[in-house]
Length: 347
Image (tube, rainbow, N blue to C red):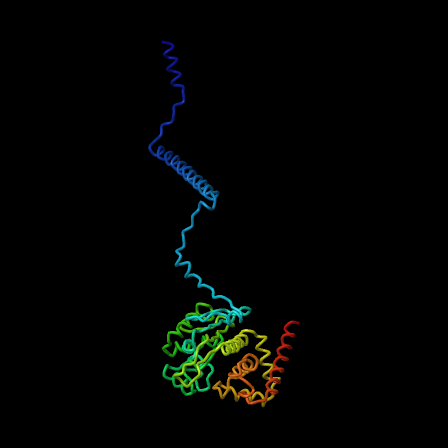
């Protein structure tokens, strides 16, 4: 009995555990729940970081990049056209299509060899009428009928209107801009030329207007071909004429793109020739329907004819109307000016 009483007293003397109400129980549960969520999120983050580190440490060969379709890759960058020296341009066999190159040593000059004078004329004659011809318009692109009348009025046909062509990127871009704004229908060869110049970075198009990217030039000459006996014009391009035309046109390309050479040509024109001698060249060029009011054209054509046209059928003392001694004097003076310019540039 005493033992039972002692046990009962001991039980009564112990601290009883607290009794939790409903609100206290909920509070405790929310506390544990937040802790579980925190540590769970931390665990997920650690696992994700470990997975990322494992992937980063893997060899590069294990990561496979998506393949680029061949067609898309080819469209990103047009194939570069080759470079060619004068000798390579002359040695190239006759082609049935345009042959396009950049001049080795001065890639600012694009050279197009056409398979015939006809193809060349179709591509460039309308631009020539705008940019060079006295009887052409300086601000209006001719229609097909107007161009045909201009060519016939000069006693030429499409093939003989020009044997070679040369234009700055700025001028050829101006031609295409005017043609677009005046809604002149261009032929297939002109459209091809426009696409080529855009593709190769000679000019760019924005909002229907064209502009040159940089100081570049495009020149044209033709492959060897026979005369057409059915016409009164001479369509012959033999090897001698072909070489002479190419030399002539390349000198225009140098004039357009090399500031030092252009400066030497202007010095010759202004300082090495007298007023009467300048008038001699101006009158000669005007007889050949070059615009005598375009001073740069006069300077450029004079240097090309005088120094870079070896075919006497195209230019000679007789055609200029001077003696051989006078012609030799002009050439000697030009060489002297050019040599002095080269020496000054080397200093």
